[in-house]
Length: 202
Image (cartoon, rainbow, N blue to C red; front, side, top):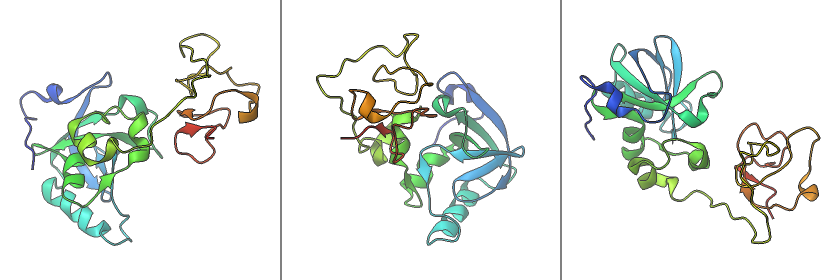
């Protein structure tokens, strides 16, 4: 296990703007979701089999062994996914001196959910890079495409690598010149039909 200091200087373990959420584990829901003071926390990037699938119960037992109920934790919420997932906050959980997300993957009880690497604050951290975030699909933009800064008033922020008109009106891929560009939620134009974070794939 990779030890970190969490007792005396917890703030140093948190990155980004949201900061750390300290508390105690009140429930371990499954292999990659816990409750801290009754609030559901989903492990960022780390994913394991469901409880009714092979390996799911073992993954949950692994987390319970490292970080049992009533343990003190620090949750570093993902700045890029503050909207959460199905009512759960998303972040890295530090407990008893270890990064639970990393331990879950390193132990073989879980893996990196690489489809989220392009939209995750922690994707560039060593553990995420080591276990899969370097293998997520690269986004390429054709040379003839005109890339404009997404900060312009007329650019929709769901498409940060290209400049498209905001919704409404609804646009289709045939109505724009861009292909294979990055897509972030909520994708108002529906360019990412297969939910792989890439729009108007050629």
